[in-house]
Length: 492
Ligand SMILES: [Ca+2]
Ligand SMILES: [Ca+2]
Ligand SMILES: [Ca+2]
Ligand SMILES: [Ca+2]
Image (cartoon, rainbow, N blue to C red; front, side, top):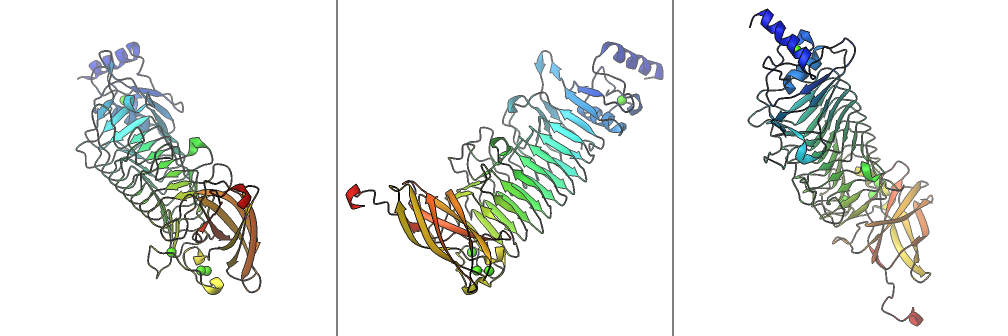
């Protein structure tokens, strides 16, 4: 078309159409995507999202126009109609431009069945790449791209909320992405929240380098109702050489459900420091009552340090339930990784397994005299319970025993009630009962005596020891509780 025709169309567009607005420098604009088409923007300098056809604004054109002026933080919204029917699926034909300017992409609905879906079927590339700071992606579904769903690279303050990255179970049936669901590389302060991440060909979330991310309120590895597995083919969450990330939190809203994945629920590895894993369900459905196993360990810590798993404060413990491998595996040079206050049970391997460089992967590591051995969590020795006293009509017990470890050092002991004992005879730790501070003598021995509340649902008691640097032991040998519940009161 000649320039007058083009100008005429632009003027008409400005006069008669709400979605089209001029960008004012420094002020964020809103671009409303109103077509499922995939053409690019016709003219970037005009500040208008327009694909050159009718009054159409495609997602691609909106991203290009939002990127064009990096000094503005624009908003992209959706109102795609064919007749009166809202359309949801956008078939992406070639790689979308990276989000290279601050912006918000705001889908209209949070519910899975009504989300906008970016469908990358047949594309060998990833879905949405975010390379700018200050980007929000809200209520979008990203499916069927050949590579990752979302890639956040070298960016700060990026949020992904209420999104579905993977299988979109509604009209039509769209499968997950070919590689990682969300791949976060060398970024800072990314928040992944209230999203469902499943059926992807790699890890659900892979964090590589960077620091300070928050992962909360997500469901990773389950289908839409949360009752059966829709696994990611890798780990649920994998943290590689990345520090100070928080997975979960102490409120129900912050809890991640990380279950059904083909490898570990969480893998923290390769010099990662100071990560916190708190308040999550790992290996169960949304209610925490049905096992949906991750196919390897619930949590694996491999050459990572200062990882906090659980806590004794309200809501801080994780449920680590029914996973195929160990509940928590701490491997090789990993040290200072406290595992406390969690509910760990029904896992196929050990509840907590410290695995040294030269040790098999599936056995209880026996206590060594003097606890001079080093390796995973310093191969911390576990306590030995030697006597149980029943008190107050079986509502309290006093446990006596010893911890043998390095001399003249403080330790915290944590105790757990269980309805069964692991096949190994050691652990696991189903219900956290309480803790006690002790210190070893010059000969490396600490005697303990602690009174704990119990009830007759617990048949076995187990314990762990944690040193002042946060090295937690494996679970102790189970001590069976004899409440004499079948004897008349007189004979107790
Ligand atoms: Ca334009
Ligand atoms: Ca071991
Ligand atoms: Ca030891
Ligand atoms: Ca040791």
